[in-house]
Length: 230
Image 1 (cartoon, rainbow, N blue to C red):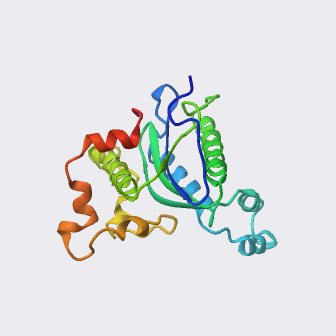
Image 2 (image 1 turned 135 degrees about the vertical axis):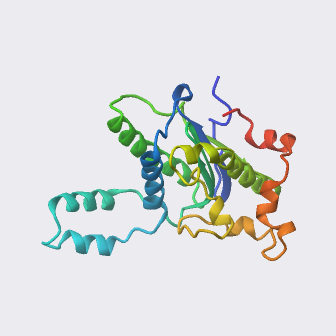
């Protein structure tokens, strides 16, 4: 029997909760470099590709062959700017969560296949292993209401906040997530919190997004949203 949410019913201009974990619940991020590499891949795929600038560098005789090889690979990469909008994310030691909006019916599938394959190749090369990194195909849940969208963003950020202490032990300032973008303490070009922040006050802390995240969990609501134990 297929795992929950592995059979996907995609539609255009819709929001989805995307998640997956490592095969056999293994770690898919073992150190800060792994997190950094994955975040750099998100940036590559979600920001506009500067093809003109890259081709100018490629024709520059002063650029090394090694750098030109990197530029060629960047030019060949898929790009999902304008197709995929990342509203929220968190990267956990053995799993990840994304809250995405897709424009075309197959955007998310192509995006997840691209980043999944690329990161698996990096991970297997670094740790001298072969085979699948993730436990089956990624899972996708259609977001059908504003309330669901808001609670999912809170759930995703609380996941990262729960591991804040462990992140500090590993020498990281935070467990990687979009939470600081929501608090206005960071501006990541490829993260778009505005769709969710419009429901919250910027001047009254009682009705702010931060206050919403720090509320006690409504586990009945959360269980309906996640549907599967990570």
